[in-house]
Length: 77
Image 1 (cartoon, rainbow, N blue to C red):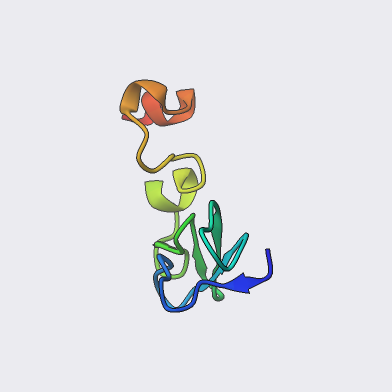
Image 2: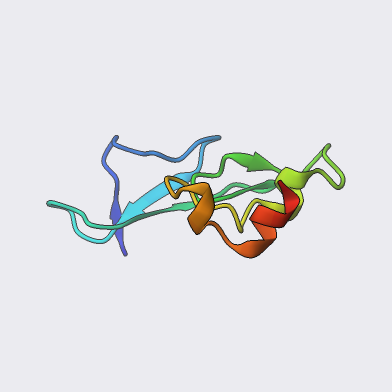
């Protein structure tokens, strides 16, 4: 993945967006700045300590129903 998302970025908090092809991309990833993480750089680590966002952030799958989420997410709910 070497192509910039050309202004169509889904990344938050100034994350850098990269896509697999310049035309008709099928995949895009975000490279998050320091202290941010998540599929879209939507979570912040500084100032939270041990919040559920910081602990479970990488386990929560966006656009997936609760029944198909990982077991750790279901238990935490």
